[in-house]
Image (cartoon, rainbow, N blue to C red):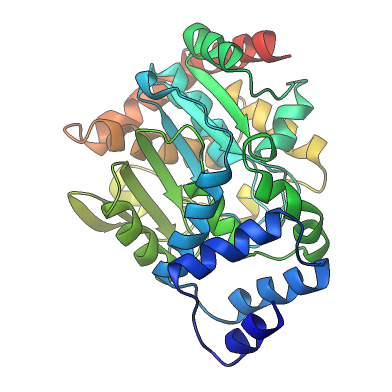
Length: 331
């Protein structure tokens, strides 16, 4: 590790196989926490390369606990995290709206590392018990079109570095890997990133895969469609900059999307959204992300049609029904 760190400090890059090996070694406990922290720091100081990202992903997928849910042709909506905005659980709420609209969702998530409440935090607030039992996951999908994969259950490398990530409290390259490491390898994915270099990096990475993708970035630094500024969307057939007004939405303020100071507060906001009792800004932000997720699955539909589907899921309480059934099966 020492020689590798010196190379990295000298602004050199890892090859794909080197990156794969170092992450496997981390997962196997071959390095101490200080060495791992130093490695993480390198990728805070400079951008990660395509080979490094691909190698780290190769390592995670080679070590993952596989789960075959391919026949469901599911979607995952996820952000890289690390944008420092501490928003409420927008991606997770959008997943339930999507399932309420009739689309299968396999959400891959974890505890918050740089925010108060990650997807796993809000799940636990609702009494959800995490599982890697495939029969339970399939039963959940069959009953409510929603399954949840708690990342440490399926990715031992992520579990091995969880305490270090939490203690550092800043974004790390593991934030970049999580979205690429859904062990079910979903057919569709909407990914939010916090800057334009990552927007380009993920777009290129997805183009070389079989996943039908959408990559989104709000120009003012959110890793989702925040409606606080213009935002950029890339899909296989297009790349476009939108304003909130172009999709029939009003602009939000940063404080409108605040996720609270505790997981309990974040959970209350999440519940308000699915009960269709949230603020307009909270609701519209979820609808915008849900709408573009639907367009990833159904590119022939206009974004207006897709947002209308999401709105109907929320207003008809079908999204809430999904949540209640999901808790019943997974509680």
